[in-house]
Image (tube, rainbow, N blue to C red; front, side, top):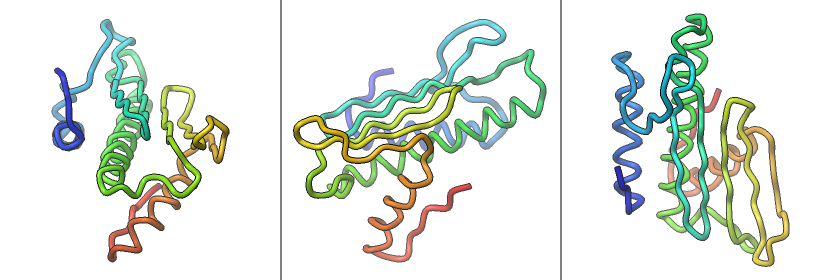
Length: 150
C-alpha cells in the first residue's frame, strides 16, 4: 500500500489502531513472515519528520503476556505517529533552531532526536516521555487537548 499524504497516513493509522483494539488482529502495516518474525512496520519520511517503527507483532510462540505487551507498544507507536503527523500538518512540530525530528521504535526501545539546520543534535531521548511533554505543550496552547501517556 502506497501512502502519499499525511491525511492518508493518519486515516490508515487510525484504521490500524481500530483493528488492534478490536482484538481481531492487525492487517495494516504488517510485514515479515513465520511464527515469530511478523512486525508492525510504519515508516514516514519528509524533510522535517522521519518516523521508523518496526515492532514485533503476533509472535505466536510468545507467552500471552508478551503478546499483550507487544500490542500495547504497537498501540502507543500508532498514537505517536498520528500525533506527530497531526502536529507536523499544523506546522508546530519544530521550534526555532530546529530542522528535523527523527522518531523510532523497535524491540529494543523507542527514541527520538531533533537536529538543527546544520545537522547538529539539539535534543535526544531514549524514550518518548519528554517528547510527549513537548507535544503536550504545543497542543495545550490551542485548547484543552492533552496527550495521555503511560
